[in-house]
Amino acid sequence: MSMTLDEPDGTYDGLPAYYFDNRLGGPVLSHQERWDEMAGTHSGFRSTVARGFWVVTDGPAVQRALQDWRTFSNKSVTALDPDPKFLWIPEMLDPPVHSVWRRLLGRYFSPGTVAAMEPEVRRIAAEMIDEFKDRDGAEVLDGFARRFPTLVFMRLMGLPEEDLPTFLAWTRELLHLSHGEDPDGARRLSAMREVSAYFDEQIALRRRTARDDLLSHAMTWTIDGEPIDDRDMHAFCVLMFQAGFDTVPISIGWALYHFATHPRQRAEILADPSLIPTGVEEILRVYSFVVPARKATKDVEIGGCPVREGEMVMLPLAVTNRDPGRYENPGEVDLHRRATNHIAFGSGPHRCLGSHLARLELNVAIEEWHRRIPDHRLAPGQELWQHGNMYGIKSLRLEW
Ligand code: HEM
Image (cartoon, rainbow, N blue to C red; front, side, top):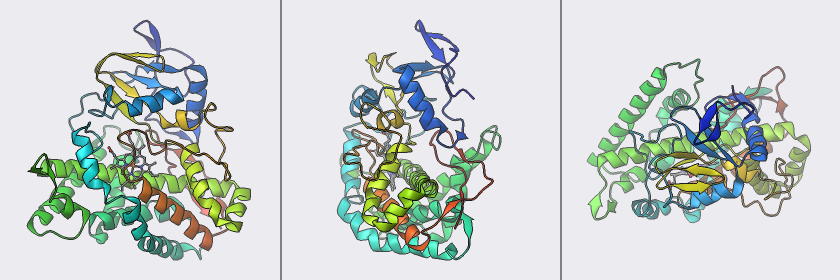
């Protein structure tokens, strides 16, 4: 695994190019620390992986690119594939069509709508933690961090709750298999087909009989005077599945890992739970795990990378969120930090639609967990590993 930029793998446009593969997993925090290291030595570089792409490692340049949608398009958001055969809505749309979708979706994810969901979100978290609080330990990702947000999301979308185990299995097959477990991608593909068929069925059900859920409401919307067809409804469902199913579990995993390994800070939030919101923001910042990508619409220089029209650019949020020019002690969670202003939810037009819901879920998870399991630590004898692509912990056993 190439974790540093010691040896160039060749040259591109006269510049050194490196074999840099973000899909590979590594020990916990290794990706975040590797970004720190690369940001310290390079402002940007070319990766030779697949068809090749640029990697920006300058914090302000990452944020600038995310905001400049005219130059950095969302037609592809996968650094390895500039011409994807699939569509995710709204993620892979550019303004102005993107703005129409955001306006329509906005009210379902607004601060007011999300605040109204709080009692139910809290009840779901509390019930799940109650199920195993009287044991002396557990694998907490499958037991809680993955189940809780998935169930919240299924209620929001109006999907049948008995399908929760199926959804959790799909998430694992789609997002969490290592290369060794799925060398030719066949398991991933087969899960993707099942997810697609599932959403097609759910869309067809609602076309016959509308219900009071986000999916049914979306079917009544019009874009440029036209109703949304099944293809776009499908692209929307698949994106919601990807966006909402993995990110909150990953963040809850990091939060539990953090408080298990920082007992003094755990004592502080127990004594004063009003510190939890800042703790959540700091955990999102320090453990940054999303690595967006964009496709250049013209030749442009960004963060030292001479990008040509049509080329892909990788924009790791970690380099902005852990930038020593932006934060003092950037790698440390500071429960008393004043300005967090991180970009863990992205920046620009595609900034996370679900950020209010994600924040609610994270705060509720940490509050309800510590109310019931105040004293917890890492179970001994486990090797802690994080996935590539989106850096979530693979498995986390805690004891209490
Ligand atoms: C802590 C949890 C979360 C994190 C860190 C996160 C992060 C992000 C980031 C960085 C983006 C921008 C991607 C880009 O620029 O290409 C994004 C977009 C998005 N997120 Fe989240 N997200 C989280 C939770 C959620 C949840 C719970 C939902 C919905 C239920 C959601 C829905 C979306 C959608 C729909 C987009 C696409 C927005 C657009 O294209 O305009 N996210 N998220």
